[in-house]
Image (cartoon, each protein chain N blue to C red):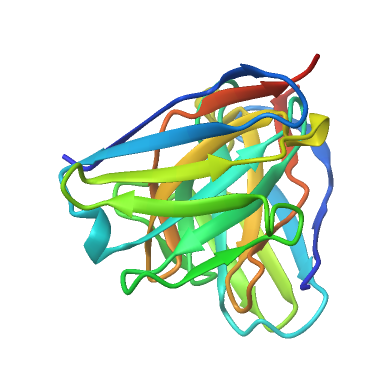
Length: 107
Length: 116
């Protein structure tokens, strides 16, 4: 199985800060990576697909990059509504696997 | 509008069975890949199962042999039959449409609690 290691597991930042989350795959997955946002008590929501493509309707302050084994998710200017847990997910191989999540809080 | 609504969760004793439903609107379940993902209380997301449009199914090792994914085309509904339930199956279960391996949208989830 492909292991997805996300870091940090949590972070606290101020409104307007740039926030970066990393996701490392245990083997080369090309660009077969998605990023999801999950707000408390809600279902996850797709933000980024194929490592760097912004889903329709998602604000442009969210972005993704990377390929192979190392990926980055960035919020360019943190907003109060971005408080959530963020997950990466690989789809190169079954079983599909998620990273452990990164909880983002406002300082 | 594309929409998914899960139902069927509840409290069940260890060893028991439960069937979850995922009713779809705005698209045809049988023409899409569909997946189940679960989330144990306070934990991260765990992929459970996928059914391809052609009917092929795959499962996580943790549920293989105990869970079965299926669909009813006439009802445009996805199902997850869960047998031999264990305490570690306690979770919110989400269904989602799979489009080029993007999970979108997701249902609101249904809570399954396995406890005596």
